[in-house]
Image (cartoon, rainbow, N blue to C red; front, top):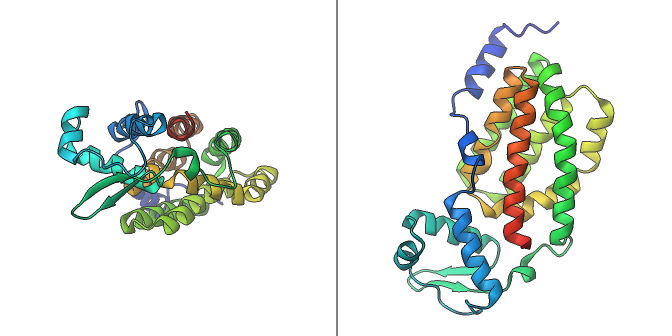
Length: 246
């Protein structure tokens, strides 16, 4: 029998609520995303040619009206996309065109369709998990959340992808519907490809933090909050996809 008032549930609740809810970050694109969009557009238009040196961080900061830390984050994201290379003591250089760096196994259109499908699936799974999860399943979800934060702190992309997928699979496994669970498991390889395509477009810490809101909804057994958390996450993913495909 599931006793949500026991020490395991209390400890899980404290773990999930120990971080502030990341909701404000979903309501508008982050400044770094906006900078990526500006620079990506210039590269796509040819205004910044392959091999060209970008202005310094200080110059970009002044020109774009953002902090140097925001510029650094944007350059890191562009580097992960393969569009920019930063050379120590020399600066950052344009290294290619956007379409050259989309995953060869999946076009931008296919990525959009994949995440659309994943949103439909997870928007059904998350509320069911919030309503039906047992104390043991909750503890497992929160353990996987902690592993996601550990991977983010290590800033290891491969480990981060693995931990991200593990968290979502743990949420799916607790939904109480064997067909939804089987469908999620069946499409896990495609979800991995999609996650890898976007993993470099945001900081490791942010990737982990955006999962906290869903975890808190599952702790509270709040199906509506779980659905909202999923929607906000995929709204942000759609925005990031637009940086790849527009």
